[in-house]
Structures are given as structure tokens and as C-alpha cells.
Image (cartoon, rainbow over all chains, first blue to last red; front, side, top):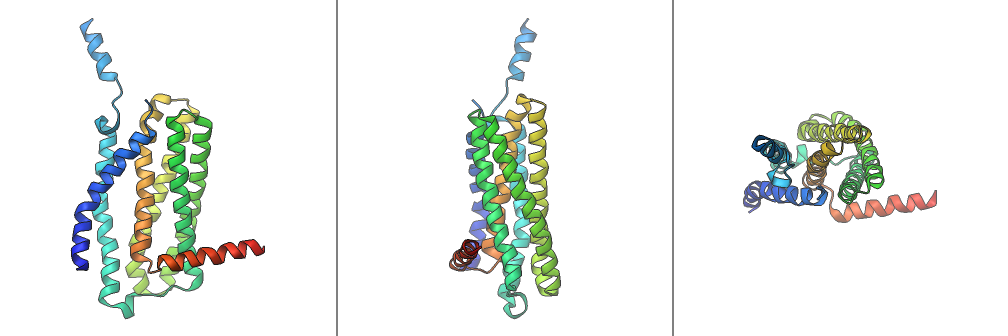
Length: 31
Length: 211
């Protein structure tokens, strides 16, 4: 079971990071 | 005439995902994550595979270093985020004050992490094997963060707003990435449970109160 979570994490985590980065740029970019 | 209009269009600053530089930073960080994850997973795997050897119980003073570093990292994240948001709102004084505080937290982290790496070394080959690369990567990431804070202050001193408008969102990605990975390492590699950590914080606070 644990290994499946690790595999899922490995796949999903980069996508989550990408959305976090998009949100951060929205928070810090001047209009 | 038409050339000039065209040139003007090209110079219009692109924002967010449309800024190729920014997109490059994100993709770079994401691909680096795969390298980093290999070492984090090795640590978890080694400890699961042979707990007697690799599940090192850290002495209290070494665990203190780990915990202080988590607090510094959280401080770094909150201060940086608040700084970035203040920058967007054009409150420059506040923004760079917060970023300066974040940089002080980062310097504290680098110093503590350095002695933490020495502690892992003195704990023997098992601790050294499982932890050295993960901690060394964190050390390098936070050193890069410090360089980026200095670069932001340099642009600010030069009053180069155009450069800062691109630099702050790009650097924020790196700063917050470092915090996320540091917390991830703490949760995955440093054995201690959230309850234990909360207890540790309580003990330290009460010690602070007695001073």
C-alpha cells in the first residue's frame, strides 16, 4: 500500500508544485 | 513606423506563465524535484529496510537542531510570502524589510544545518549514509535563496523596478520551493511525530518563559 502512495506522490507532486508556482506568481506580480 | 509599433509590442512585459523566464524557473525546479526525491525516498527506504541500522534515534541536542531549523524554515516562508505580497501592493519599505528578515532566517538555517551535517557524520556511517545528501541539498537550496535575496536588494538599491517586477515572482518560486521541500524532508526523514514536535515547542517556550 505504501509503495502505491509513493508512486502516486511521485506523479502528482510535480503538478501540485506547478499550480503552487502559478498561484505564487499571481500573488507577487504587479499589475 | 510599423517597425516601432512592433518593437513596442515585443517589449510589453509578459506575466505569469506567459513569461518564459518564469516558466523556465518552474520547470527547472520541478525537474530538480525528481533528483531530490530519489535521495528522500532512499532515506525512507533504508530506514524501512533495516530499521536496526538506519533508524537512528537522534540525541536530544541534535534533534534540537532539526527542530530549530524547521521553525526557521517556516519563518522564512511566512516572511518571504508577506514580503512578496507587500511588493505587489507597492509597499516597498515593508516588502524589503520582510525579505531582509527572511534572509536572516535563511542565514540561521545555513549555520544550523552545517552543524547538523557534522552531527550526522559523528553519529556514524548509517546516519551519514541516510542523511548527508538530503541535508546537503537543503543546505545548497538555502544558500541559493540567500544569493537571490541579495540580488533582490541589489536591484532595489539600483532602483531597477523593471528587473524587480520579473525577479520577485521568479525568486519567490525558488524561496517557497525551498520551504516546501524542507518541510517535506522533515516529515519524511526526521522520524519525529507532529505531537512530539508540538511538545518540544511547548517545552522550549516554557524554558523561554523562565529566563
